[in-house]
Image (tube, rainbow, N blue to C red; front, side):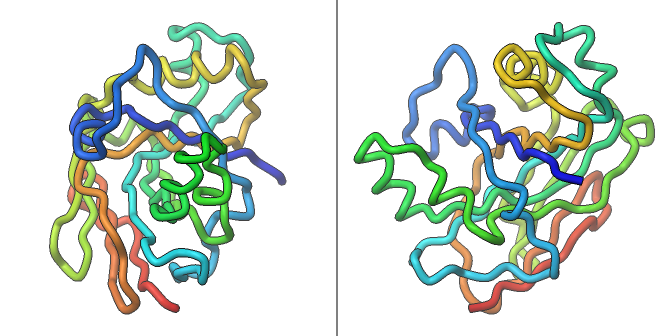
Length: 203
């Protein structure tokens, strides 16, 4: 079954600040192709970047279609949450932004996204905590309530323009602490202290 991957930028104030970006009155929305999702447990640094950055994000999977959906209606559109990485070729992204080009090539390459198994939302607290480590050191941590635009707001916003389908994924934005990966790095992703995923970086 095919699915779309929608991604959200500028949804955590501390991350906006660390990258020197300007907050707007709505988040940045972009997409990755389904083929960007890692399926073999390995993160591979592609040859066209010297600065592959991790961005840790909570992910939702839609359980039903949504088009021009209200925020109230959006609450019933998902019931599962996962954690994953939005991987970014930061040097390429900077070049594309300088040219006022879209980010696709720096965000949508093969292996540019990871996604853990999903947990039922009913089995999680209201303010979900999540974190990631590189080689055992915590690099990013955050809470669901740190988001500037909550998940129902994101679903409703995207659905005003795009016909969302059951099975689509939404990456909800990253907190501060993003940074580069190196060959041999080992990454672990956690929700509520529970390890959900583990990757090793390869050439």
